[in-house]
Length: 237
Image 1: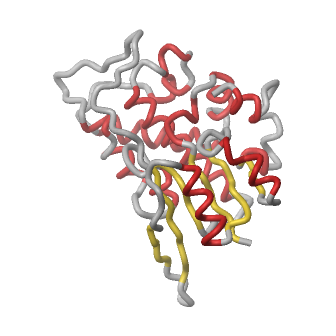
Image 2: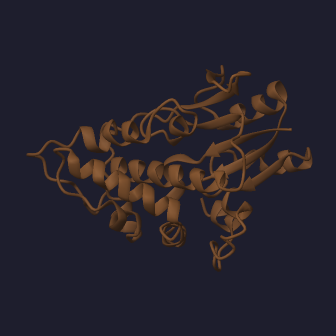
């Protein structure tokens, strides 16, 4: 049975409960610290990424570029956590423009490239103040595009990445094409929360296709959701 990991993108950290939990995961903390080091080595204004991820909603929503980078960094950490107990999947789905955690997972970008090439860092010059405002900053934000990648290995163990031909605008169509054309029978959400393809979730389960959260598959993260379950978070979107 083929599986696909789905990276939930920009809105993965929209709930304070989620943010309070993810920063307690060692792999996430390590990636935030690594991203902070890369940020500090650049010429961008000082910025505390850990405090930003753990901040209240008003602060997180105040700068979309920073939120996008933070979400991607956290998702890379969550994917690494997933790999502690599971083998790497064959298929990867996620946003492909902006800060794309899916490209790090598929081996297209390094984590350092994700951070140093992020619009959040590249577009902040030393003379420009870092903008944390009451109203979201949306200028220059492009329409999100999605993609899917297949990673295969040769007999010598060498990996090859193939970008699949899919609808770049509609995540539901990407998920459907993976099921119909590539016989994917399991989707692992790294986000968390079923944000990209929620309208398809019931149909997938009816077809006996697994839809799971990476944190739910981790035997050491039983505490993660606290009093709020993933389905309740998804329904609130």
